[in-house]
Length: 603
Ligand SMILES: Cc1cc2nc3c(=O)[nH]c(=O)nc-3n(C[C@H](O)[C@H](O)[C@H](O)COP(=O)(O)OP(=O)(O)OC[C@H]3O[C@@H](n4cnc5c(N)ncnc54)[C@H](O)[C@@H]3O)c2cc1C
Image: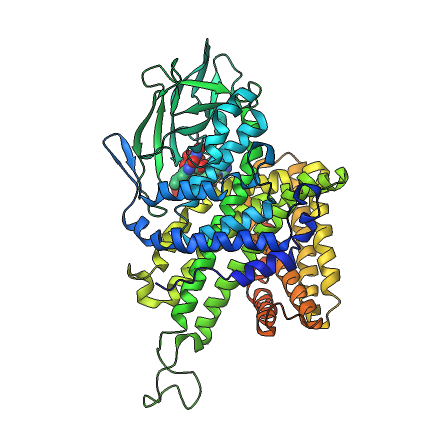
């Protein structure tokens, strides 16, 4: 298997030139860093990924995590990754210096996690969820809880999880029933959680679960959900770690990401499970959602990474596989001529270019979201912080969904590039195809993200958040207009924005009339429509930056590199943007065919 899973030049071009990391580095929180120190860190992560992650990628699929004798057996590399990754600062990277963190910008942590995920998407979740759980504790829990758990989590010695889902409460978290009863030494927790990633595994000393549960007597629905820290092991009176009655009941065997264990946990099977409240009672879902925005971008990032790795694998294959002859008049039937490489067939180039525009467009979307996240927390001007925060809110459901949904199609094209071999286990494409399938499901399905985008984000703050995003898009349009060659695409993007206004006007009429089910019935179609346009914006921006570099005679990358970005943008505008017109037609069709009662549809 070729050791080429990432296009590091494209990552750096997007990070430094297109999304201008420098704008984040000038914020006082990051004053100790410059591009050189960031490069050193990212190069170390790449070297770590080459050595400790990529070589185990296939093995982790072939030897899935599994439940045996009451424990989850994982690939031995999981514990090594936790330990070495912890030592490298992969969990502590985001946190403040005072608690042992590295205080790196989120954009850099995103780039670091992306590199790891391109190498082996079965491993980063173990540290990533630990980071997420630690973030919740640091932000909202009291000092005592912080003192007990944070150091061990940041060092990678203890794992962390997010325990939301229950058998009857998946998308609908208001239906959570796990309970918490106040007792002298905390809360007695009882209930079960399913599908918990990294929930437990052989050899890990402790796992710190962040659990959503209801305090007895709390209001029904989302207003009665609290957040608890519930470790697998708690401290006995003598200070030793002892069981906290968290039982691993089973695991889930899956079609992909098989090395990343997914567990079914029981809390309080023997009525002896203790949890400690994080923050205020009944605000648990609010706290969790603050973290879930980050987690959603992380899911989009993982999908973007798999898309990139699959693109690299199919590109390498296409450059080596001879098959058939060029479609030229003389050549195509001449068996005396040598076969050509499949990369020379226009249809194969089309598939590869589709993979490229989705892979790089998704990466651009993820880096931009991280930049908004950084500036919403660290910008010196509070008005700017608020502006970036709103931009991030609108972009988050798209950043989760576009890479997951289009990434799946992109990897499917990658399988197709390999023909029959794409379907066979000897080649890695089939593994990427299986691995990426989960990304549009966990952390809120595409359906749920789409309801959020159309139902909440489009009208958030009386539509102000959307206006801020449109202003950013118009800024890019203005910059791109400086280059004559880009004018046709500037016009196409302008037309797509006009179409967005028409679609929203049409749909909002239903909301105004109180017809909410009709308003939201095609939310997922709207997601596809608007996600396509947002990534079209990002491609125009990439092309404008490439033009700028070419015009200035920049030698940072080759002119072929910059020209390939402009070419990819043109591909996006020829093959992807026109789809928005068909989607707009669907969205503005007066018929509501999916609202007909069930027996008339499937009767
Ligand atoms: C491998 C894996 C790892 C996971 N890791 C974790 C984890 O670490 N922690 C955790 O808490 N959970 C985890 N989950 C759970 C995951 O977040 C849920 O599976 C997901 O939120 C969907 O819930 P569900 O499976 O119950 O599906 P359902 O909620 O039953 O949804 C089924 C279908 O109905 C649609 N649907 C549901 N409600 C609506 C609605 N109101 N409007 C429109 N459509 C709707 C959905 O979009 C979906 O297509 C994991 C799941 C998997 C498979």
